[in-house]
Image (tube, rainbow, N blue to C red; front, side, top):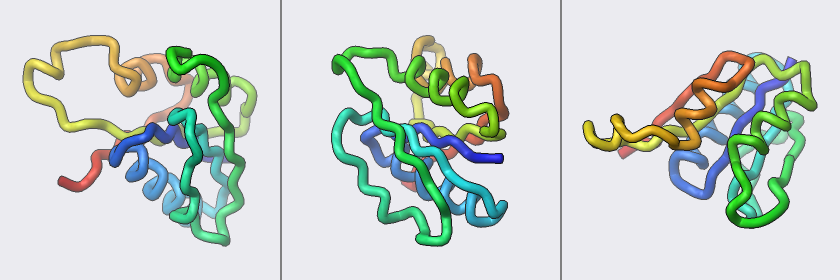
Amino acid sequence: MSILVAVADSKEGRQALVTAAAEAQQLGTDLVVVNLALSALDTTSIPPTVGHELVERHGRDDADPVEAVLDALEARPGVTRLVIGLRRRSPIGKAVLGSTAQRLLLESPVPVLAVKAAR
């Protein structure tokens, strides 16, 4: 059993990482961290007692981050939960389709824990 977290370069992504690390620690499981940022990821928020694997997203800047997460899930059948960060959106923004988070919510083969960053 593992938890996979998709970490974007945003406060929502950082909150997803903190929440996923806490979940992994509470459940006594390991953590798979998918870095969607295409830059170095600070993993110091992961407690030393939580084993983790860092998966870097390679390729062009315009490569699909959803595919990177779904590929990581497919390659790791022991993952039982996906953690993602959500942005606060306006009522009009909620009607717009195509966000990474929305696609992951709809296409994930495992349950998704969606978290919001503190205001």
